Every structure is written in structure tokens, then in C-alpha cells.
Amino acid sequence: MNDWRMYTDATGEESTHTAWHEVLQAIATLDGERCTLVHAAYGEHVDLVVAGGDNGKVLVQWKEYEPSEQHFVLTLDAPVHTLETLTVEGSEAAFPGTWCVPLEQAIPVCGDILRTCELATYEGIRWLPVEEASPTV
Image 1 (cartoon, one colour):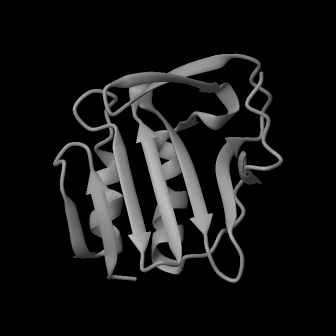
Image 2: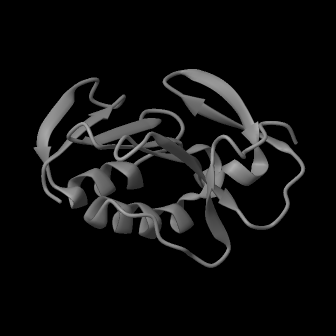
């Protein structure tokens, strides 16, 4: 999959015809300060948004548009009963702790999804449909 459109707040610009590994490199640079958002889209079919980077944690969202619209958030399997704050484009936002995945766990998941455009299963984390996700702690 080497035809992604990508936007990062670090550059403030959208790039086209971006290879999956270039998107993954941008995700790996999320630091919660200078670079806090990577949005990658493959045609009009799917979107991957990774945000944050504060203290090595990120929020990962995946949205599919065909055959029907589906929206997922990557969550930790272990219960976390706190809110965590992530910086996204200069503003702080609070998210359930289970939605704030360590970047080192998110990188292989994002690499797989950027290469295949398919959700897979992983130990310790899972994709949760947003309509099932409760934003409360």
C-alpha cells in the first residue's frame, strides 16, 4: 500500500503518494509537543489517525467507509480506570486510560494496518468499535 495521503501537524501540509513505511515513520516521531497528529487516508476507503505521543502514549483510530462506515479505537485489554491527557495539535484532551496505548505497542499494529488495510488481533490490545466504546472511566 504505497498510495497514502498523509497530514502531520509537524509539517502542516498534506503529502500524496506516500508509502506505508513513510506514514509509519511519521507515527514513530509523535512526541506530544512538536508532532502530535498523523492522519493517513487510502483513497476514500479508510482513515488512520494517530495522535498524542505524550509520555510515549498515543490514541489510534481506524475508520472504514466500505462496504459500510465503521469506526474503531485501539484499546488496552487491561482495565485502566483513569483518564489520561494527550496533546493533539496544541490542545490537551482527556481520554480513558485504556485508549492511550504505548507507542511501542501501537507501531506494529499501525505497520500491519498500513500494509494491509485490515484489522488484526494482538495480545494485550484490541480494536473496539467506537459505538461500543464508553468515553467514561
